[in-house]
Image (cartoon, rainbow, N blue to C red; front, top):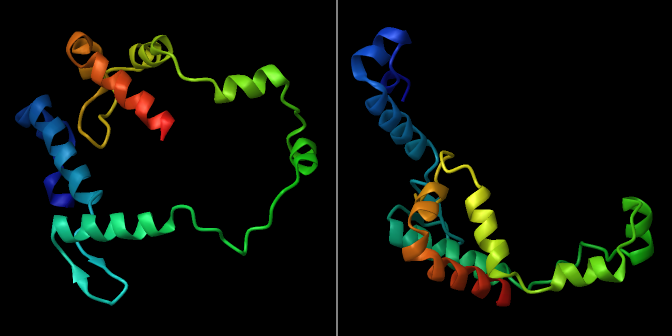
Length: 147
């Protein structure tokens, strides 16, 4: 991978900023991907479909499972450790439904030039296309908090 990176300022001037950006993205994507995964039977999985299926199976099986090695913590111990006790108003705000205004405010206060998320869409995309995708984003966020 090292040979893909331009060396010094000469490489950047020759290649241009756009090429440099796409080269860095390609290098990051290659480094941040799973090429082979071994399942519980020891078989190597090397296609997107088999890897994603195994990941979904594994994590779905982990949801809702009680770990006997984890001991419960009392409310009094938490209060002592954190040094804070939430008022009833604070507790209610944690379980209150998320409003459309809160969701939109978060989207529009995000730096649009930061790296995109796993879906490859940056915050700038959602900000610029809000009139088109806004209702879908709001529905998705509300669905997330209701599940």
